[in-house]
View 1 (spheres, rainbow, N blue to C red):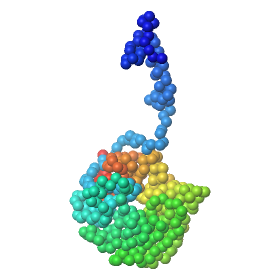
View 2 (view 1 turned 180 degrees about the horizontal axis):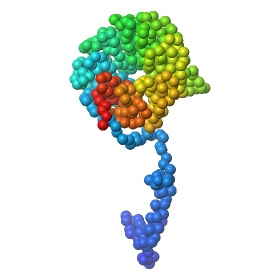
View 3 (view 1 turned 60 degrees about the vertical axis):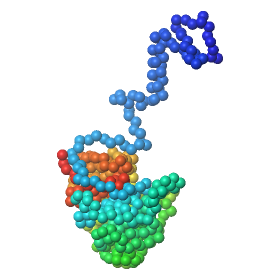
View 4 (view 1 turned 90 degrees about the vertical axis):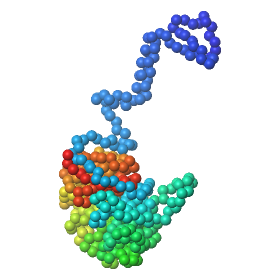
Amino acid sequence: MVGKVPPRRLNNSMVKHRINSTFVRVETDPLAGIFKRLSLVVLLFTLGGCSWFTWLPWVEKKVDTSKPAELVKFEEEVKIKREWRASIGEGLGKKYLRLAPVILADTIIAADGYGRVEARNRFTGKREWVRNTHNLDEGFFSRFNFIDRRDPSFVGGGVGVGAGMVFLGTTFGEVVALNAADGTDVWRADLGTEVLSTPIAGEGFVFAQTIDGRLVALDDASGALAWRYDNQLPILTLRGTSSPVLRDEIVYAGFANGKLSALRASNGEPIWEHRVMLPEGRSELERMVDVDSRPIILGPTIYAGAFQGRVKAVSRRDGRPLWEQKTSTFLDMAEGYDQIYVIDEDDKVLAFDHTTGEEVWSLDLFSKRKLSAPIAFSNYVAFGDSEGYLHIVAQRDGRLVGRRKLDGKGIRSNMTYADGTLYVLGNSGSLHALTIDRI
């Protein structure tokens, strides 16, 4: 009970101060104060655990595996110089879109997630044309709609070029074809379901894959359906689709059921199919084996990778497997220096000999940094991360040689390289033209 204390109870070791009718005890004995402070420090160290002592060299450091790996220090060997920068629309939004810019002659073409397409001179960054392909509500009062805050981005696949046109795939189920010279509409084809792959053109057709497991060929002059190839879709898949590759009148495509197929471009006739990975496990989650990475073709060999599965080299002639590595990936791969570069689901960077499949080197420094697909050029491999850093490593041995932050919202789109310049589209819509020079 708090109350008044008679004066006779006070002594030299204790003083009572009255504050708002409440008494506070103040110690005047210096030794008692020191002991109390020491006790408090010991208590705080006990509650804080060993983290208080991690500065000591003999105390084991614990890494917080729930957070992205911290960037390591290294000796820079290259200078990443920005030649120009431009802003492409409103960026990629929140739907994990990956819209790589594409080069056509002296022009680089890029799109945002909301249907804005821009063509710029790839040497200077000067805009040549711009086209808005969407009909979204952009009135003044739309920004005050606090009830529906969903991300209205709708571009699912792109940007593709060919036959003098630029192509986009949309979540509305359309393939949009624009004139590459000025961005005007040429045609639109309604496929009835989301198009998340990059459409490609060749042999008089435009090829695109849909989210429900179909590969379609459209007449490149009119957009009319020429043929389609249906593939059985698993119950559960990743949200993404491999983009087809055309070579020597044959179109190659990976599917969500773990298959890689070769089809005749003229009529869709199947030539062969190969299981990159057979579904395993009890749950549908464990049985996901999507082939979402774009196949790579090198001479007589085609390379493909599956989620929770394998990276494989397969004969183009008959689909016969040549080698495989147990590696899970859903990103596009890259090739160079007679090696195949893969970033696995744990953000580990690996290099495999393209002939034998033997692991040449690996780099395990980027855990949980959500790396973008790699690109190989000159002597280097480049990739971005979710914090917007561009990382450069040596193709020969995987050592870090350069780093630069480009976009505060991250980098997840594939990059493009031509004539000594690397083009990077950040998630915010920032398009960078970069040169890499040795220091």
